[in-house]
Figure 1 (cartoon, helix red, strand yellow):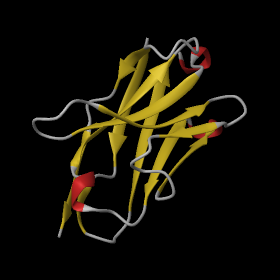
Figure 2 (cartoon, one colour):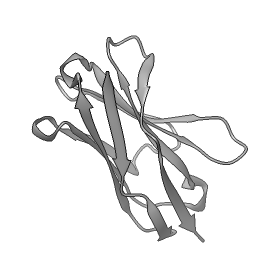
Figure 3 (cartoon, helix red, strand yellow):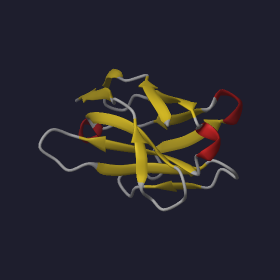
Length: 119
């Protein structure tokens, strides 16, 4: 079992920045990759970013490339999402998730943190 807890959401004006954190606990040594997803009201869940736990290779959704940065702190078992140049369309609940074996199946999810970007 892996437990994930997100934090850092809030209200920010367009053009501003926020940094989300996702603290992992439990069987974190089995984690292959961590991802960030988001879901806005009435919309499907959207992939935001992914990072490979060993090595740090990163991947981004098209809508956030060049604005968001995913990173990790292995010692703290924590993944971060630095969000810059925020837009109102970035408003959503953001979730982190763990992929245990590289299959792109995220078996564990956090409870989510709300990000609201005002225009």
